[in-house]
Amino acid sequence: MNQVVKDFACILIVFGFCALFVYGAVGGSWPSELGVQPGKGDQNKLLTDTEFTERFESWAALVAAVSLVCSLGWYVLGEWGPRSKSTGGGWLFAWIGLLLVVLLAVIVAFFWGPPASENGWVLDGFFAAIGLFFFYVATALFSPTNTKYVVPGSTVLRKGW
Image 1 (cartoon, one colour):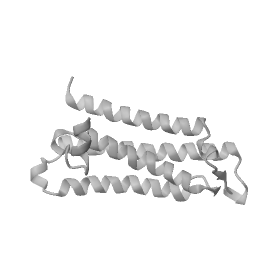
Image 2 (cartoon, rainbow, N blue to C red):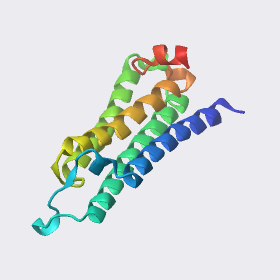
Image 3 (cartoon, rainbow, N blue to C red):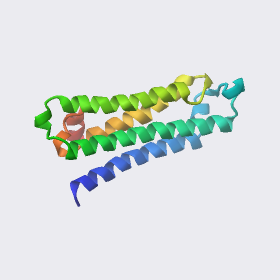
């Protein structure tokens, strides 16, 4: 099987685990189990548990989708973009740029996601985990040959993989 197909499949598997994480959080009511209380939404009314869960699920899916698109974009850029020796340190800047796009999605979810009256940091941590962690894992382990050691820490991770 072609290495590109294998890598794309592995990236999709990584984000399959991300989807399971989101599904587990929503289905298992992890936020409420961790003390998150719904806050006031539109028209200054307290959100119901259902409304809160729907908003949480939507924002988590959005952050995960941005992370997936950036991971796939990194792969496409590394596989079919300029050779790594021709860009110098530009590859690291490109990866950091994509990481910043994911971080921006996380920050947007912090501010526009479901409001919490207590323990809102749990939601913030969850959004950061699904956005940043899964982007990092996908790009560190499954970058194309041209850029496989550009991601910080990828050398150490790949030795164990």
